[in-house]
Image (cartoon, rainbow, N blue to C red; front, side, top):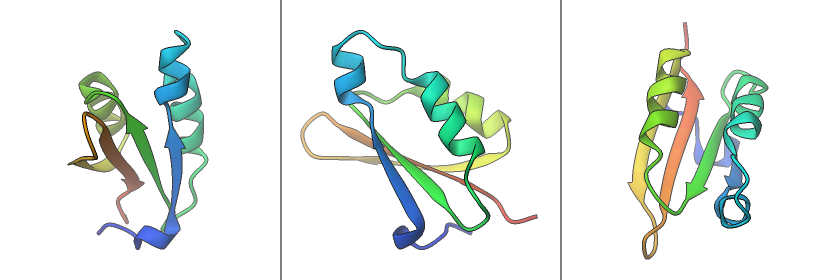
Length: 81
């Protein structure tokens, strides 16, 4: 079950990508640091399908939403055991 939105942290990767910085290491670190009942929202200018597949493979649940304009909001959280 998805945690309440108030328990999600936001990480906007658009500026990193614009500078040519690969955000995966930072995203990976942030999701693995989440406590139970916490989540991370990644805001990106495109749908990062490889990221979603990788983190789902690591045991995270996900929800994808189209944001404003061409942006995407990808929610990650741990499913309760």
